[in-house]
Image (cartoon, rainbow, N blue to C red; front, side, top):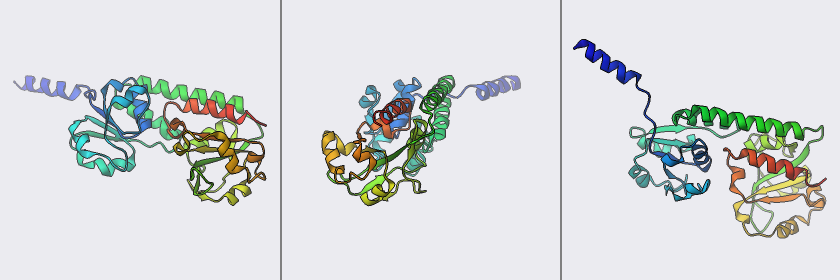
Length: 275
């Protein structure tokens, strides 16, 4: 009898952790990682911003960071909830019902680590290792090809009023996009320590970037020429003089996920479009 009980205990203790069958993701980049690791079929819930790959749009929506629907989330009965630390407080009520897996995406190293962590939780360790290796190797190749003593001075604008150059928020040097910019042969025109500072047009004149890249979903449908017209009043800025101004509306550019390779390839081509 003792041997039987001992055998049962050994079997239970040595049994591999169960594969999570019901997964919820609380950010678009996390959703993309789950699909890229081949576990999209187990995704039962995500946010209303999760739109890639296309199958992600058919998954039950649980709102967003600011309006998370806990009732719907509870009804989904998830085994695993993948989220950013900022969302932990909102879902802590579920800590005894599901595994909460927080990961960070502040920079590229965070992204690599989060892919490994998520891959391990989804029993896709080899796929995770391969994904990280592919991203690193591709970015290294891009860095090598874009290598030049002269860096393209670039300003990254995270948002502003759609019809005027006001309420300008720029991306500082601690964001993953700044790392991508450096890899692609550029350098941030902003040299301060604030992550996302608010600046005036006069400050941008002082920074005098060679390229201005704006990221905003508010500019959907706005003609590029109209954007150039807004900046045209400041020909003293190199980027304006050379018409090196680009508005990015594709949300993937603000998602540190598997598609950062696409971002880097597009950015390095953009920076080499004009002198």
